[in-house]
Length: 352
Image (cartoon, rainbow, N blue to C red; front, side):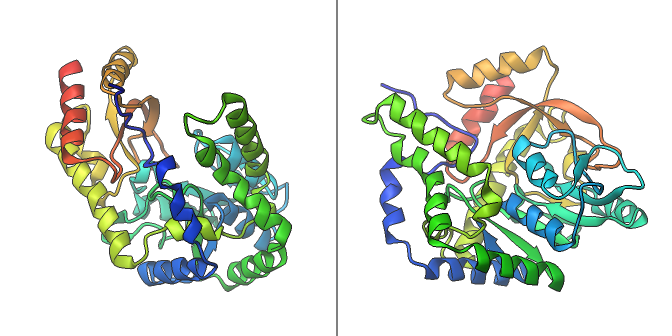
């Protein structure tokens, strides 16, 4: 009997792709309405969160001589997006004009300290809340501290693709909406659908070479997101239908975190300071261990069908003064049952 795999994301199973067939254009406006109600701020729904970074920098007329402060673990796709308008940097200088403030894994930065330093340096604050749907810091929702915030849908929900930009900055809103209207053409709407191909072809009956072609097409499309920024109606059809459903799925992640916390909170594996002043809705949880221990833990989880790997987590939760430590990423998405969460935790406990 084949063991089921527990991945980091709650992927949409190929057997449920029929859900995409019910998509309507009105799904896009529905998602925008749900998010506007949830955040209490104007929302622009996009094909991906990082498109919001491009739109913000372009709206503010950033140039290639301007720098954007980023953490050292940014993926290439985000660095390339920033490089369309500015230069990513790891250190503040007189040329630094903005900060991409990343709430890593959904754990909020220490916003009191970070925002004070950002304002001191007169930086435009873009909150990268891609993995932080629902997290709060001192009772205030992540994504409502800075000038602009971006969120990713598939890190929190089974949407395959999609994201949004949240802001009250009229200049950014006007630019973004005008840009979306200009780029909303038949050709770019067709291109945006390419991102769904790997899921359509990810079934045993499809030949490997056809899957490789589909993945290659997606990579080409993925690198050109700024040219088709509009959200895909099929993706929006998969987004939670109501605010109540959105919050229900967020609560499941919090319950899974509570189980993980019951095993490891206050230990070296999961110090209590990680959640100080924060109510975390995690993308996944960090389990801290030594470089020698982590491969052992990864193998132990793999034997149980759990996908994991080593990352580095900023234990200070402060981009201006980080302290990165090796950690194992532990899945916690709403596709996991309580039984599976306890299995994950006991496996880690026994293996360590």
